[in-house]
Image 1 (cartoon, one colour):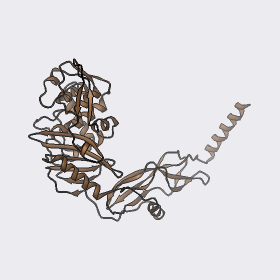
Image 2 (cartoon, rainbow, N blue to C red; image 1 turned 60 degrees about the vertical axis):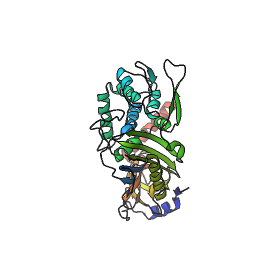
Image 3 (cartoon, rainbow, N blue to C red; image 1 turned 90 degrees about the vertical axis):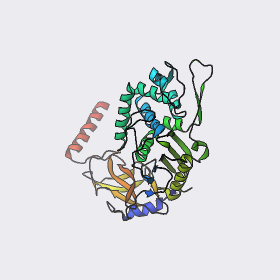
Image 4 (cartoon, helix red, strand yellow; image 1 turned 45 degrees about the vertical axis):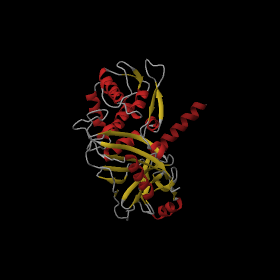
Amino acid sequence: MKKKLLVSLAAALVLTAAPAIDAICPSAQAAEIGTSALACVIIDQRTGNVLLEHNADAPLPMASTTKVMTALMAIEQGSLNDPVTASRNAFGVPGTSIYLSEGETLTLEEMLYGLMLASGNDAATAIAEHIGGTVTDFCRMMTERAAQLGCKNTVFLTPHGLPCEGHYTTARDLALIAREAMSHDIFRQIVSTSRAKIPWEGREYDRVLNNKNRLLTSYQGATGIKTGYTRKAGRCLVFGAERDGMAVIGVVLNCSDWFDEAARLMDAAFDRWDAMTLLSAGEHLRTLPVQQSDGLTVDAVLADDLTGLVPENALPQLEIDLPESLDAPVRMGAVVGQVRMVCQGETVCTVDLLASHHVAKDDFPARWAMYWRHWLLVDTAQ
């Protein structure tokens, strides 16, 4: 296990920390890595920080890895129990298919299994028309949502990724999309499933869907996500894995040995980076005096674990942003500051600091209000 819990180190740093500490490490950049892929990236799933990359901002076709975005839109905009009916457009779409009949209806969840395991282009079209009304409007929605996620070089013109001039993304953008998709339980469940069955209308037996992602059975801790291939795009793969407290997401575009290269890149990320926790959720970081409270204080408490990935053998530092004091009244759970884990000049993780309890304001109006409330309570009791 490489996960490290450095509470004693963190405590020592906190004791000597000023209200804001400047990191002293030189700036760290994601490591450039040699690869057989035309473009690749590995990111930390928790923070989105880039760990390894090559040509990550080159706009390229992405084949059926497009369907990661199609699935994300369906999950965000639809209901899993929605009935989705295949139109003539869905029935007639070429390429990989789950063999929907025109007029056949499945639930949205069943369509998603067909989309992500069997890479059904017909399922992609049916989902697009169900969510967007038309494929064109759905693709516009996909592009707009990608931009909201921080994608700077992504345009969707199809929901399935069949060759289309002007339909492209980058390794970095596709990783951002996959990270957002992996934040949904149902998406993680679907893309980590090796084999599933869904109904087949008019047949006495179900459709059997086999996941095309070989990593699910060959790579320890694999979590998905989606394969893609066209002659123009080459072999494209969005993938992920969890090990030793780390969760990574990766993308290779136009990569002839896609599965082997994805495994090699993830091995490199797991070897070069460590999962590290400096402070845990609920820990009291500092005690702050509260002005106009008759000498009362409040503790600054971590809202979440201060955890993240740092280069192997690197020593992260704390930056603490807190005022010297607070003004009453203070509400329990109010954000009073932040603490950051910083390594080699880059912020690895930021966590809010919260007020541990309520502190009322102690002045004449406040005291008069308190006395008045107390009098009303006594009078009512009588």
